[in-house]
Image 1 (tube, rainbow, N blue to C red):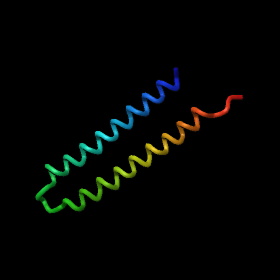
Image 2: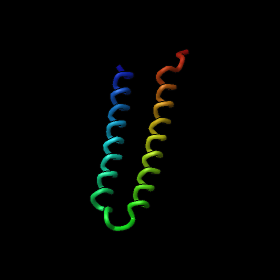
Image 3: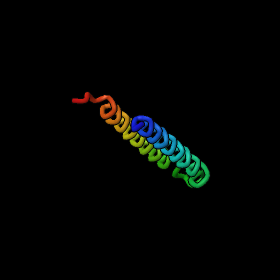
Image 4: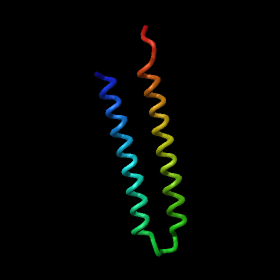
Length: 72
């Protein structure tokens, strides 16, 4: 039961991260467009989104280690 809840939590976190990423891209399109700083904004959003997905990958790795650890 704990594993199922854990997988549901990981999927929920992934969906939230994806929606945050899409929201940042949409905000950049409508709020920053035409101001001359599009390149800087896009670079920052891309670097932060890569960092976010790397952190999620680390969480998945640690979670898999916890789920499949050997019991004594």
